[in-house]
Image 1 (cartoon, rainbow, N blue to C red):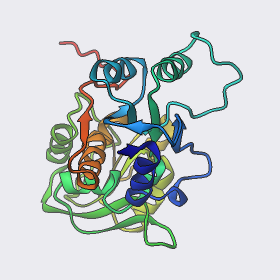
Image 2: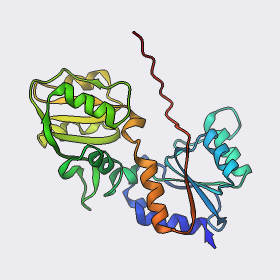
Image 3: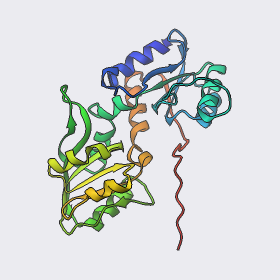
Length: 262
């Protein structure tokens, strides 16, 4: 018999709550720790469509990357997507657990997955913390690339139809920094560690001015930068509970859509 609390303890071992940023809301967001769990659904965002998916699968717990409960709620009524998701989860006795920034920083987490996808070597933490974890990673590509070849590589790797970037550099790109999610805060860290390029997401207009002749900024999209995350979480849970049903959500929860023409 596996309880919600057993899953919570396993997730603490995968990525400890002490790693969470102060602004974040991780851990068990919905549910009773003493309730029995017989099936887990792993997703990126626990939106209403994913709750429906869990109901159809008879999954009694959802483990997500982004917390559906992030800011304080004064009311929980079916007027917005957050409240609808929570109400439906409670109605169907589905627990929800979120990892978010703790999985951003942990070894083997979001940024390590990005580095692995790009086959980076000599990888180190981009924004280190005292416990040797931290946001982002930096390492070397297998071979130096031109700026255009590099952009083509990351578009394919992160499966994005569009890469927003700063002025193309003439310098070959070999040393690359990565950070999943919103990473503008680490642009200077990437520069200080000698990155030729920095891949992240959610760069604003003025952030791109920090790109220079020998430093390329590339925004692959928030969801796209974290695209390997739910698979990794599911795999880690299967290792912890090898005889337990852990299902990967089939729903792509990226709220950003792209229009292309021509």
